Image (cartoon, rainbow, N blue to C red; front, top):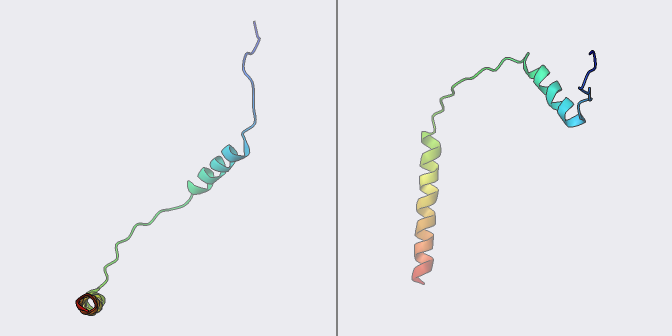
Amino acid sequence: MNQTSYQIKHFSRSRQLVVDTLRVAEHKHVIHGLLEVDVTQAREVIRQIEARTVSINWAARCV
């Protein structure tokens, strides 16, 4: 009564790649961080460009 009904199969290349990736990733440490940036000047430049663009579009439409 010592008969086995299972088979041993090798992993496919894609499955082996996943296993290898997970094995490497378990040793990596993830660091999350927050970053604060002052965008006041950038927003002002964008507003100026948009104001000029609107004026040009309005003038072109009137012609």
